[in-house]
Length: 435
Image (cartoon, rainbow, N blue to C red; front, side, top):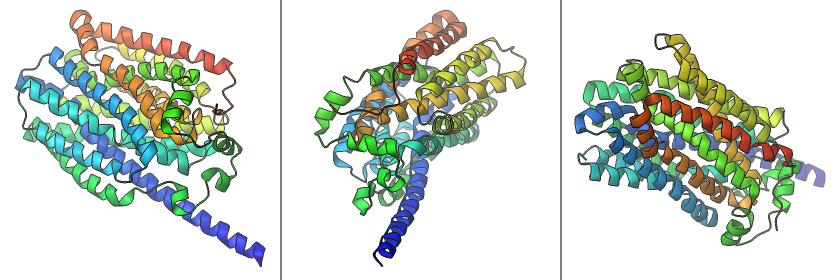
C-alpha cells in the first residue's frame, strides 16, 4: 500500500510538472515575442522615419546606442531584483510599459523626445528576460535544457519573421507611426494577460526540484553546490570573479555586435546597396530570423544530444559557420537575389545559436539561484556590443561605407572563436562549484 501511495504521488508530481512546463513555456514564448515587437518595430520603419523627420545616420546611431545601453543595464539590475524577489507580475508590467512607450513614441517629432522615450523603452525592455531565465532554469534540468531553451528562443525569431512584414505593410499604407502604434497596443493587451499566466518556481507549487524529479545527475550536483547565500554575495563570489563568465561575456559582445548590426542596418543596407524597397528589404530580413529560429533549435538540441550538455563546442562550431556566412554576405553579387537570401538565412542560423547558448551556459556555470542575475550581467556585455553597432558603427559606415561594416563583422566572428578556445581546453563539464 505504501509503495502504491508513493507511486500515485510521483505520478501526480509528474502530471503537475508536465502541465506547468507546457503552460509556462507557452506564456514565455508569447510574452517575449511581444517584447520583441516593441523593441524592433523602430528598426523596420527606420528608412521611412529617417526621411520624414530628416534624421541622419548619426541621429539613428544615437537612438540605437542609448536604447541598448539602457536595455543592457536594466537586464542586469532587474535580474538581481527578480532573483531576490521572484515577483510574478514583473514581466507583465514591463511589457505593458513598453507598449505604452511605443504609442507615445509615435507622437514625438524632435530628436530629444525620440531619444528620451526610446531610452525609457529600453529600461522596461529589460524586465522580460529575468523572468524567463529564472523559470527556464528551475523548470528544466541540465540534460534537456538546451532543447527547451532553444524552443523558448523561438519567440525572438517568430516575432522577427512576422514583424518586418507587418510593420512594412503598415508603414507603406498608413505611415511609419502606425507600424509602432499597432505593436504597442498588442503588447499592452499581452502584458495584462501575463499578469495572470506567469507563475513561480516548482517549490512554490509544492513540487520537488527539477533535478530530483528527473534524476539528472548534473542538475543535482549544481543544486548541491549552490547553498543559500545573499544575492550580493552570489554576485561577488560566483559571477564577478568567475573566469568562465568573463569569456562568455566578451564572446557575447561580439555575437550581439554582429546580430544587431544586421538587424538594425540590414534594411538600410539592402535599400542602398541592392536597391530594395521597404517591403522587399524586410521580407529578405525575415529570412535572417527564420535561420535564427532553426539555428537556436539545432544548437540547443545538438549540445544536449551530441556534447552531453556542454555548450562551448557547439558555440565554437557556430562561430566558424558565422565567419564564412558573413564573408559570403559581404561578397555576394548585387544582382544575385537567391544567393543573397541564402547568405542572410545562414548568418541568422549561425548567429542565433551562440546568442542563445552563451546565456544558457552562464546559468549552468553559476549559482543556481542567480539565473536572472548572471544573464543580466551578461546583458551588460551583450548590449555594450549592441551599442557599438549603433552610433560607433554609424561613423564607420559614414567614413568607410558598407565595406567597413562588413570588415568589422568578419573580424568579430574570428575573435569570438579565439575567445572560446580556453573554455574548450578547460574542464568545463563540471558545473559551478560554490566557494
